[in-house]
Length: 262
Image 1 (cartoon, helix red, strand yellow):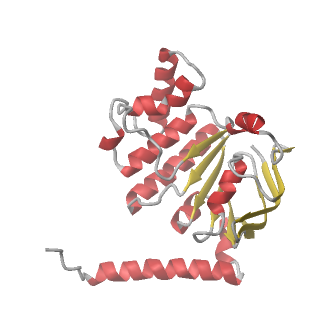
Image 2 (cartoon, rainbow, N blue to C red):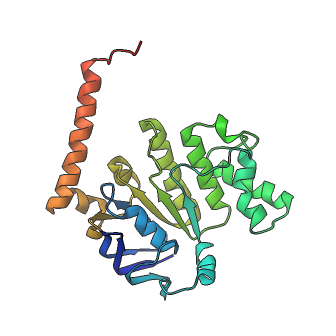
Image 3 (cartoon, rainbow, N blue to C red):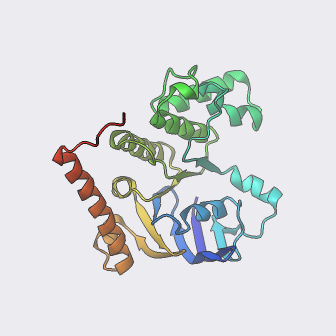
């Protein structure tokens, strides 16, 4: 899926969330959308699937403008996307197998045997083989996110959307999720869009990235160009992240522990 966004504007209340956002995402790449909280990253994702309409601007998918499509027309567009929510979005009352196969059963009306085969394949792809009978409450945060990826894969989506996929995970589990995202991209060829502020993930998985500040892309390009950018907004973001990691490392190495609560 090839996506072109041109001069997108969106105001919510009195806040200008998107202010002339323009960017291009090429078919099959892992594209990372990065920026501080509140800069319009998640709002951009909602525009891609028609959950929000811009005040002005254009969103083209494979050469077709989707901005003025009706809700019925957008239902067909959304079928081309797989959305992986930050929380995972699993239903606690269903087993892992039932969660992953939910769309196949409720929307596509596939037979039980077909669903079982597809679900087993997708769980294996994300490293959860043999866990289909488990309930979400028995899974770790990383396993829940992998299950959400498996569910998105069942529909053979042309574009996978990840909203803060490593949020709330420890470093080792975050690394695992990064590896799953890269592996899934290689195996499926789906255009992959990852919204994050985690620069470790950015530098590990991105083919291209767009840095958004105040509702517009102030950097678009490769990872090395982003590292070397002299734009003051990019430098401030990179230096803030570096200072945060240095502070965490220093506090860990100091051996100082917080007093336990009594």
